[in-house]
Length: 79
Image (tube, rainbow, N blue to C red; front, side, top):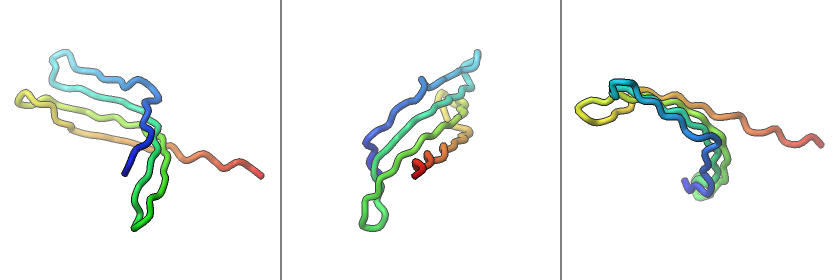
């Protein structure tokens, strides 16, 4: 995969618990590029959002969960 464009649609939100042991991140991006399918390079474009949670254990942050989605592609223009 080669990304030609990767842009935050909103500033990512990061929140850390008061005791600094838990955190979450919410992000929304638009991206485009090319991916290899067999011998071909196929263009792609997508909009995606995700939410990830983290726990600090032994002084290191580890991701504990992630949920993501992709917006449906736009409808082609009517003839």
